[in-house]
Length: 318
Image 1 (cartoon, rainbow, N blue to C red):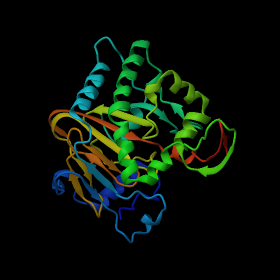
Image 2: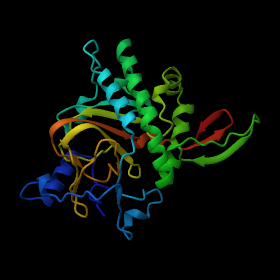
Image 3: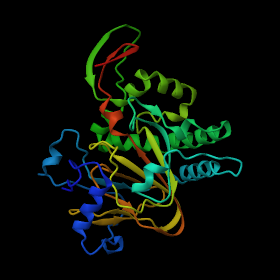
Image 4: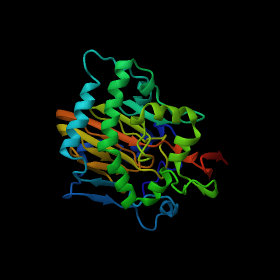
């Protein structure tokens, strides 16, 4: 089991030191074997590994689901992404400093998160823009909501029901009766959309922000993340999803840790889900063409704070 970073200090130097120890003569992704079986596949954890005893551990370390996003959906997403780069627009970056441990090219972070915040907030790049830029962002997020979020929800429901249950709202409201529902849950979606009035108001005004609990944050960029890293802000037992769009060569997902040590192609329309807080990862350079990469995730604070008692039409945090 690749547990080197499960309990380690959250520091990019830890990842670098571990890779230097594992690859004393230097690391080259091209030296790793290519793992590309036909269609979809799972990389399973060892059955007797201590880490798999966690009740919420996902059923796979990583999985590729082939041809999930339709061609129509891919075209809509690319068109909406290109709309963000219209010459008349200036969609500003606010999180470029967070990217230094993984890539030389920054990503936009759209949606809701609780990274280094006392409560969930709408990201700066989602809200601190001009009116025309906000309209273009919402158009892009609407395309993601329509073509990506339902696919991820369906995969979670079928293959990772514990992760789906954790992220979803508790739909136990019955009729119009006022009744106490004493269930204590870990479902983050209702916590985000009901308890937090700032986020709730933002979603009411901008429904494109609501991905129905499939994920809460979307990072998007063109290119690759070429530096080996861990997504420290993710939850240990959550699944991060990658979707690649375009027509390119190169851009393999690299999982270099002992026990895995492979590079995996993720083609246009595929969904690649993996434990980004556990598995060190990076991407090989794109040698030709254009590659747009969407990373859909939920940070650990949002999932951790989704513990509540649910009452009819109200929420009380424990």
